[in-house]
Length: 367
Image 1 (cartoon, rainbow, N blue to C red):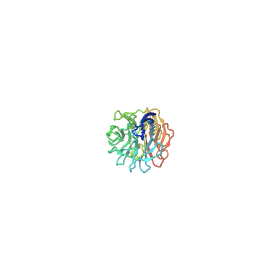
Image 2 (image 1 turned 180 degrees about the horizontal axis):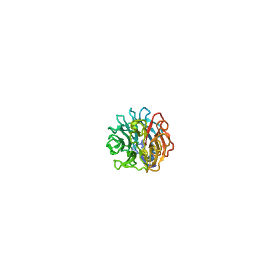
Image 3 (image 1 turned 135 degrees about the vertical axis):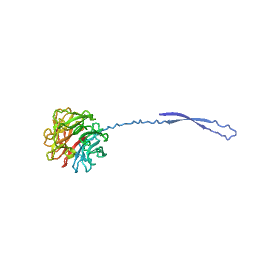
Image 4 (image 1 turned 60 degrees about the vertical axis):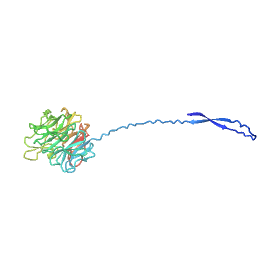
């Protein structure tokens, strides 16, 4: 924008006429006023509006693939390994001259509880999923086995003979408050948490046979499960060997007085052995020799609709559910030695995940 201002410049022009003749009066002075037009330029700056643009980044949550912990003797003794769910990326987590076995994953997938005799006696240990942070949880005489996490990850149930019998114990996840829940019962094995964590199921030797029993998490309310099948028969004389005692990962009966007639025992229950509930709590997977050899079965949680998933002359054992409930991993000696396999929950697409001359067993699936 331009603004016009007028300034008056007064120019005084004085014309002095001096006459040579004496005493003449001075001439009239004429004042000339010149009007100048001065343009004042005012520059109006154009201010550009600064627009702050906030770009919202899309956060992509990448869920890592689920993994499977397992036991292998490929390096000369039983150690804990982990692999991806497709069998790739097999990594050794423990490295000790002693045997490490029975890995079980915490519900949040951050820790592994397992059994080891590295300190001279079978004890329960816990470590991070990368093998770091090894901590001993138990420290007392007696055999320990079958450690299993409660659904909330705050407690661990396990079997111990510290009180001269096979009993179910429960302790906090840090090893504190170890409590015997079945001190008045004969031999018990295979403790398993029910969905919700308020009850435990275990296999009980009673009246000459095996049957499953359920109890509250504090040991009260011990009740036999009515499966509709008679309990498995146990010979009247002989000795029992637990899994870790002979390294065969199942329970055997050895005849009194010696001999080679070692018999694989089964509960006879509809739950089979080593029952494990699906993530949604609607199904139970287990292994059983009800058809002549150990096979994997699945049934509804109300113990109905029993379905056999594997069918071969070998022993298929210790099923574990994938976190999403769509697959089951297990170990089998169908190809000459014990290896880890996976299948869909209807028994289809049975695939071998490990392949070496050593034994790979006891899979434990985790997120």
